[in-house]
Amino acid sequence: MPVPDLRKKLEDALTQPGGASSDFDLNADVKIPELELTPAAVLLGIRAETQTVILTKRSARLKHHPGQIAFPGGKQDPTDPTLTDAALREAQEEIGLPKHIVDVLGHLPPHQTVTGYQVTPVLALVHGDYDAIPEAGEVSEVFEVPLAHLLDRANYLIEGRRWQGRRRLYYTVPFGPYYIWGATARMLRAFAERMA
Image (cartoon, rainbow, N blue to C red; front, side, top):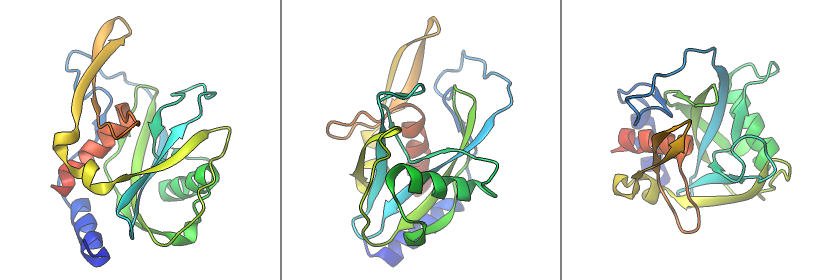
């Protein structure tokens, strides 16, 4: 679709009703822990020309979520005036994405993770080329998934595994060799619902 049409569709999606999500959405028997959540932001960056979504594979050496597929992003530092600033800083640090080619459109509703973060997806169009440079300590790979694949709700599956003594269900949206699941898949599913 032409870039102006894509931009309009994304802006319309930001105005759709819908609340926050969490890692507990598919598990009605699990009580969401009441704790102070750490603010964080991720960049849901869509390459305008290729209409692909930028994702990362986290380093296997990381303490939390090693080897998992994620958006570039992280917690809001005291030096980040806004969540948007946090997402842009993290994307530059993690994958070398220059801020000046990122056209921020707005925020999607936040997502609460089992690890105590309140993650706000920052929706943006990325214009032009850049050389992805994975920060070796955090990111093992940068790759892109066609937006059309992620917007097709038929591509989302519900799977489960044992966690803290019980079966925990979660969304997945596999793509080729990439197993996209958990918080990233849940945020993408919520985005797909808004875009439908």
